[in-house]
Image (cartoon, rainbow, N blue to C red; front, side, top):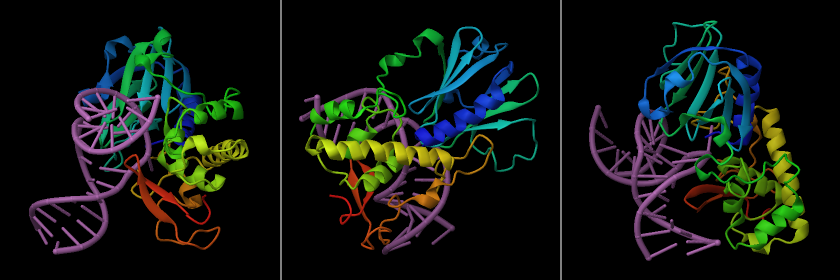
Length: 274
DNA sequence: ACCTAAACCTGGGCGC
DNA sequence: TGCGCCCAGGTTTAGG
């Protein structure tokens, strides 16, 4: 589901609405969706809401942290008041966190891949041996770093872009869009990229992610992603290749192709991407 | 270290 | 209407 721009959009909204709120109760409608004891977070106050890779990190006042992964179909919706006309809106409700001021955070998840976990705040970094690469917007994300990573593997560049241990936050939509922007074939072995191309690729990564955040993420075709305020994102209107197979390339007029890489749908223009 | 497929789930769309 | 298949923004695990 959500990749860096979508999670970032959700986190910014939640940070401005949840900080300072006190948790009064937690409703767990799907046990699989909540890992830990809800008693450990009841009565605590929300201190911080941040993003790391595609994870949402909510720090609480008692040294516990809520770690949330939305996976493919998770949604986090903030309701400032309890509403009764939820007919279809929160159809796949799995967990509800209620606050003392009657507002609530609702976790919807059609496919039940996502989760909310209660962990000790100190463990966030190396959570479950989770190895995450640098954030694209951090100062560690340099051309030199990418040269080092790419030089060590012949894997298709698209798979390396999506490898969370190498770079944090890029998923299938943005990997496709970034490679089109950079003019690189998705199946090009990472090792074969020259220094100039790597520099261009880094620029494309920052450019596309920045633009996607500006448009508040992508609510694509059969989208599950919506913002925490219930509205759709609009970056899907700016897709140049993703889900455009069979259509005309907006740059050269040729046909956008669809192939498979690592089991994932891969969209690209053979004329523009070498 | 690399690769692939399958698994975790539900639902929509398509061909027959 | 229905069946079977493929598809879906992600990660983890098992096996080669």
